Length: 460
Image (tube, rainbow, N blue to C red; front, side):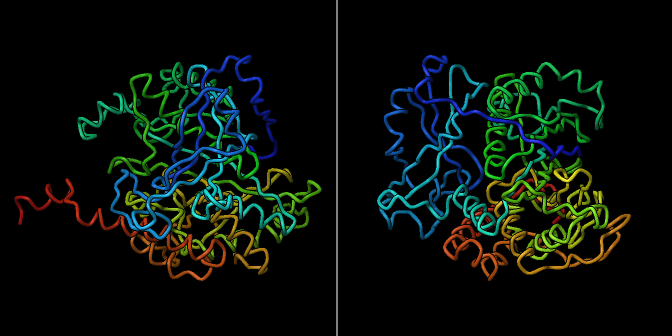
């Protein structure tokens, strides 16, 4: 429940490809980001990395054409047997070349996905989708900045051990509700010290880390930076946490609600804009609490289009378990000043720290898609001069508001029908992500759950 301090930027100097061996690196990972926000790619020597900088790395389009389990039953227009499972290319973005300090002698470079023949960015790739929204805001004179607050659960036992137990009888790393407590944090500090140091050394600066409320729940906030860099840091952070947890005999999960009777895990997203001259359009000393009309327009845009974009804000079956609760997950079309019971929380103060916080997304979001959705909505709200209405005061959960789609199926169909989504992101992108979600829902509906067996096996 902590907040990143959004008033400053930490400088990041990428590695020089020519100096990798002298700097002690013998391995380079070139990585793209899949539809679930996970890293994929290949490892190579620094010599081979330099050789492919212009051409890029050839990858099968299956990575954007299968589900989370890499099942091949998903049918999309972009790729499949009907296209011969053609290749695309990962073109390294050298501004992201950095140490993967949680691994030995390894550097990592994120890459953009481009068409094998034309060299054009792949429309369905998450990094492309976010880049286009950043560029659209740039055309309007604004540069977006963001920071994410990620919560996750940490359990004793390696991923292989927990998988063999089918994730039953989980042993959490805290046994009492200990939100903000230093004592419980001290017990796990040897591990989290490694995490913070590895992230800092990897160019992923940490704002703060803390114990969270749930049993075994933790939170790490990343520092404020430009929107694309923020999403890049987010996916590197998740990979580092998972890898370090496994190396230390533990498992980290970013499921929004891994257990029924405890708090959900969020990904609260903070966002603001700066002008080309460094101005802060969200701040107005004459506005209520320093909130400008532009910030009000942005908040209104985010809220007005949330229902259409729930597929990107709540992208899994499990998402609904958190959003349907009162786990600080927002509530309908609500906003308020420093109010954690609203969907959009407005934080004011210093001009550079005045921002909106979108509290709806859970820890399962793909940060590129969630940020793209927010930025596209903010841009529309500003362009339309949208009115956010009156702020909520007190408990917004006590208010009655329009409900958002409450299942993945509902979210997918709303996304497919959305004129806004098609205009903002492209009809091909909308169809692609709708097909992915529809397939996931179908897999779920064809499966018999433990809940069903426990409830019906004897009683029916």
